[in-house]
Image (cartoon, rainbow, N blue to C red; front, top):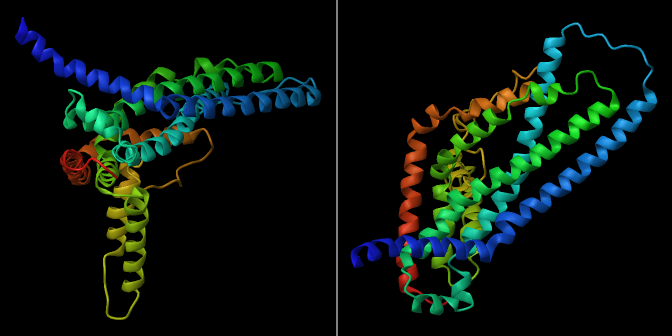
Length: 328
């Protein structure tokens, strides 16, 4: 009986730490995205009302003929998909800022206010504490963001349907019947493991600086690498000096600082083959974006695995530093 209790205790402790992180940072993980999405929904509703009123006033009364009704309804369906992706995109942009500053202050803030001394007196290991913070930054926060973004996207979707119906747009229900919300959500959920691995170097670097810096972790985590890249770029412009500046900026800035941004793992963007010339009309944007969910090229690239290894090493170093340092 005791053996079962002892085995379950670390899991319960870790679950408790996850709850603690949520209650301390739910403003960023949940409410910031809800508020931003609510603002977007409000302006979408305002625009739909104004557009519907204008369309009703300017309606001539003639029937609208469609040369290709199938193509028209398909386009409306892709517009519906785009609205859902738009809602998720809004939440993802907010998530990027939340995760960045959450990871940056995750191990520094409790040293600054000395609450780390309290937590060290509790039966909680530094490994569990650091991993609970990493779990929120890498996995739980993105999952919440997808859920909130889907809710915002559905609200935009419904507003568009009602607005089109009031405005007298032909076949407004095609926004619902010809869109693919469940397929889109499944594709987005499939990208979560990719995003986790891809974001590891950025989250690991930010947590390392948070655990290591005696003060001003933002200076060491962001400004110092940027300044170093700028100085090296200036140096490479001098005669006789040749440096792989493109790779330096890619590794230090793109992978080191921006990998937590959703979608930066895009195989076409990473390989430098991001081509928008195939876009013929706005409805093609959705299909163009979904090409980037192809995981084969991402998982088959050494880039993601090297970055993940570096990120894990940085998180492990953060655990070691947390054990050694108690004050900022």
